[in-house]
Amino acid sequence: MLESILHTAVNAVMPIVLLILVGCWLRKKEFLTDDFLKIGNKLVFHVCLPAMLFVNVYSIESFTIIDWSFIVFCSLIVLILFLLGMFAAVTTTPLPERKGVLAQCVFRSNFAIIGLPLAGAFGGETAMGVAAVVSAFNIPLFNMLAVIALTVFVKTPGQNKRSFFDVIGGILRNPLIIGVALGLISLCLREWQMQQFGRLVFSLQRDTRFLYNCLSYLKSMATPLGLIVLGGQFRFTAVKGMLREIAVGTVCRLFIAPLLGLGAAIVLSTCTDLLHCTNSEYASLIALFGTPVAVSSAVMAGQMGSDEQLATQLVMWTSIGSVVTIFLQVCVLMGCGLLTV
Image 1 (cartoon, helix red, strand yellow):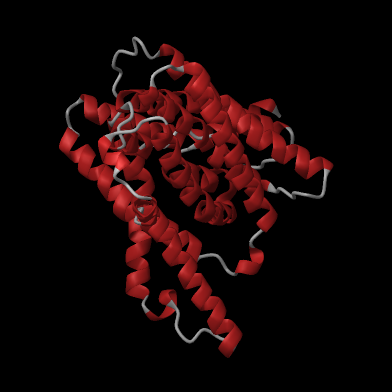
Image 2: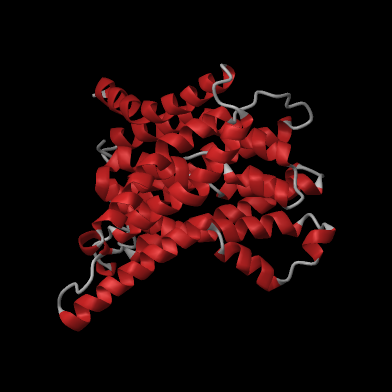
């Protein structure tokens, strides 16, 4: 039994890991240049990922299949992790420019690039659909909380001039949020057609097949290109002076976050009627709470006056460490009979 669990878990995790290693190797061989990685990252973030999120949300059959208790649960755990992150930031480092970076490492996972394909690998298309719905609520939440974390401690002249509406506008212009929002709008229009006419008068997938196929192709590019670019961005630079922050951030991201998210879900699902988690939900929880800190967190930190070097180190070390921790999470859940890959 143990051998079967280990074998299945390795087969699920290793494709993701190997794509990251391919990126590392190509960068080492100077096949990938800094300019390519920069443009590739923009392509994934601004085009491929929004297309993926749109198609995934659009593929939801109906709002009636959404488990709202699960959505509320995931959002509440993210908020709790945000508070824990702020506490860890205040008590760990005296440097203001590092506090917000450490805080967002605790609650902000790489759900879009690594989490969504992981959910699909562990739970199939059904889990991918559940994860897409979760992303519709938690990706906007991640971005809003990240803005708060990165502005509370560091006050630069540029930030002091930003109004509340500027911050909200920046959040709403996020490509990932736009992709999810367009998917939800399309889903609402489809629901409205069914209620008004009893049938679909217009369907993107049926009546504009060429457009839907184009979006599907972009969706297919998101995962492999995103992971290769992620691997190419790894830099094994000196960590002198950052060891405490890196250690605390990595432990919180890879151990505390999944322990809280998965642990609470198991307790509520097995001991109460407040939550009903199946294979798809547990796969989505690994994607949401078990993945490393988002790659975009380093870019955002640099743009908002925080320590970009620390943010980059946290992305690197949580990504490397997640290979082991995700593997352990899968093994534990499979051993308990809660996850079937």
